Image 1 (spheres, rainbow, N blue to C red):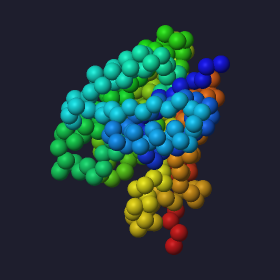
Image 2 (image 1 turned 90 degrees about the horizontal axis):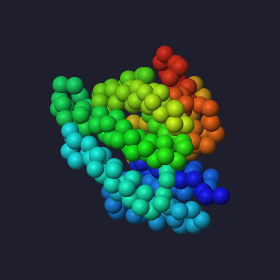
Image 3 (image 1 turned 180 degrees about the vertical axis):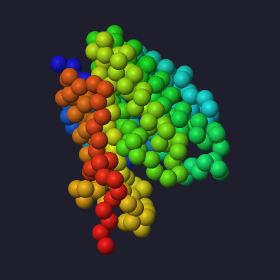
Length: 260
């Protein structure tokens, strides 16, 4: 039986790596993207070495031509190349994101906001549109957004990011309705804080940040998010339009209980 293929965006570092490794270890072939050619090539080589029985293919693709213009042509070129190679991505995982760090309402420009919204919402819509065309032709598929618990709980100086994640959930729900008739499922994973390279590079900050104090006393690693993504892709046959929160329970508490 032919192996299934997953297309994962933003898969050269951090959570993206964990998602690639989860699918590759579970028998999928993997297509992934990153923003920079050198990082894509390095990641591609590392994945192929770790998973020699898996077909791994990386593409360097950026979301924007400039802060106000999504690179729609790059997306269509990506899928056209996959078509030419005879590759059908049965699953699309939308992991890439502009974090929109340090955005301040009276200091940041309007284009700063547009850059984040365009990457996290509009660009992802372009990817969904192209992927769903192929899924429709092949009789179905599924799309998984890697969203954020900040879609419901705002954090300081991240206006564009919080707004984009709320908008992304709206996009997920609308796609669920429009694509369900084609046997295409659309779901979202909502991580909270994740132990990424930022955690390791800023130990003093993350030792005191309130969101580390979760009800279960721990913070997610990339593999936790990857497990949730894989659940939607491989096991949730009758689940669409759903959200799975992976944040140690942070979303349910009014405020973190910080030890003395």
